[in-house]
Amino acid sequence: MTEKLFESLYTFHEVNQIALKICKRLQVGDIVVFEGQLGAGKTTLIKAIAHHLGYRQDVTSPTFSLINEYTIDDGNSIYHMDLYRVNAIQETLDFGIDEYLFSQSGYCFIEWADIIIPILPLPFYKIEIQHVDAAHRRVIFHRIISQE
Image 1 (cartoon, helix red, strand yellow):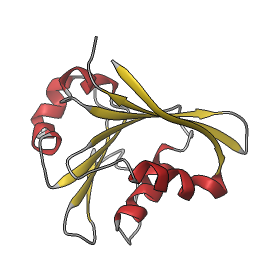
Image 2 (cartoon, helix red, strand yellow; image 1 turned 135 degrees about the vertical axis):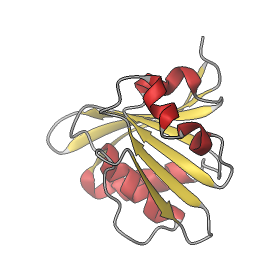
Image 3 (cartoon, rainbow, N blue to C red; image 1 turned 90 degrees about the horizontal axis):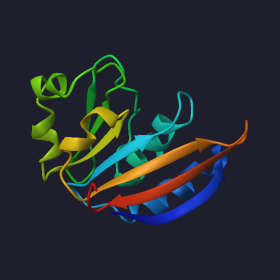
Image 4 (cartoon, one colour; image 1 turned 90 degrees about the vertical axis):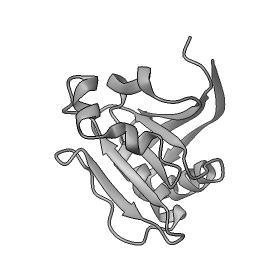
């Protein structure tokens, strides 16, 4: 079961407003998966969310490292994962993804999460980013309560 929390059209200049709206829903321990085509703005939105949560340094895509960990102002962490190059759930288990997914001291932000959706603890959030045109994106923010 999926609960749609909001849908919004935005420009690059409005990404911080969208990030703030998302942050108001999040709590430490939450998992958020980000869906969208290459170049849709997943990492850009994660950067803005991380800033609002209290991370003051540069956020980079963990495409090759699989995971970047950022410590935020309150001492909690953001675990930013990019599973684009992962081919099997076992690969994620080998690098210890379950430790991050069940951590109560951080937020998990996961790009290209399709491969691990079946093992994600419920509930979790899903953010869909759709490329509308050169200047606009559509974001749809869901809470996933069950996987039916």
